Image (cartoon, rainbow, N blue to C red; front, top):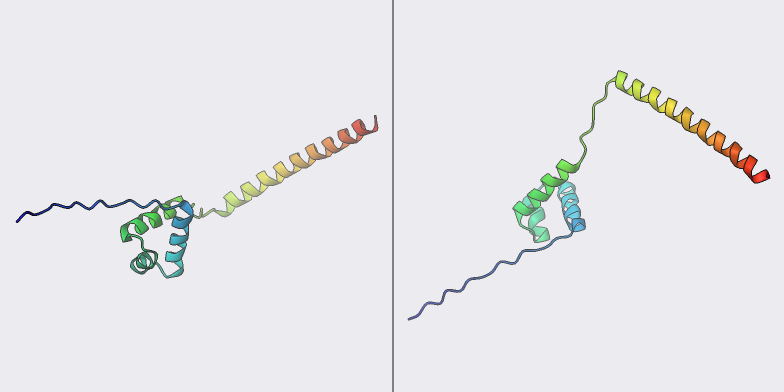
Amino acid sequence: MEETNKTTKKTRHKYTAEFKAQAVAHVHRHGGDLTRTAAELGVNYWTLRDWLEAAQQTEKPAKASSQAELEAENRRLKAELERVTEQRDILKKSLGILSTT
């Protein structure tokens, strides 16, 4: 008897970024149950876990700012607003002067 050695080739699936994002959102909606979500979507558990970790790394962690930092940023933004408002007013006046000539 002759045995045949059949090798099965596993095909790699290409998932779009949109699909990955939706899968991660699905995990969050269902309380983080990776096993259930992977089975529902037909995706390997470890692949889904990698997508979840990648999504968590790209999210910017909330920066805890102190009161002093917030006040300093507020002063900086007010100064910038004043400068930009002044520039806008100058441009408006110059546009008015140029359009009357």
